[in-house]
Image (cartoon, rainbow, N blue to C red):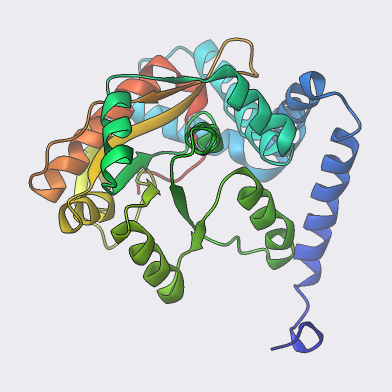
Length: 292
């Protein structure tokens, strides 16, 4: 279908997209070291209250961390959107972001030697990741080493936003595959050819089995574990951890998971993520409706 016959996105989506592009357009005029915290501040102080994020963060923390003080909760209410804003600004900074990752060589953790061995042998890899720190710091770090990292993504509901968001993701590392039949087919072909797939596992999915996260019941996808089993793929937990300067990262690769029963494998990933989040509470996306 040609562009001329495609329906325009709804007016509301176009207005929201125009506002976002205006913010990012102004941000690009600012040097990188100031741009990233500036967009973080905007998300924390302007967008989060309007979007209802602060209430959702408080609700999730009341469930998962009732031990926190009121002051600690309020700090997180502001810090979590700040990290989200920084991450988006980094994605839209393209080469300025990826070059910093290349130069810093931030890979660490017990799983790094296993990734090196998988690359040498052409073994497929499942990179189990979450909405933590900056997901794209991980992709940039792997791509900088010449490792074949792909990712599965869900196109945004806002079609106007997709027009620039998807190219921004591609500029960091390729390939990326959209959710859906065609994307899944291409992803499986890539994986079976020795590719590495970054797959998220920290969002609620209604038809998934009930596991636990922060000792609360929540439905967790089994897909990363199932794909690892079907394709004899290495599976590791990986995360781009934002450092205290707010601009640099360490990309931590956990020890490989032993293959076993899929639900047990995914529970182990939930447990690993929980420990990581407890150490860096401000870096997980507490805005998600993880528990329902």
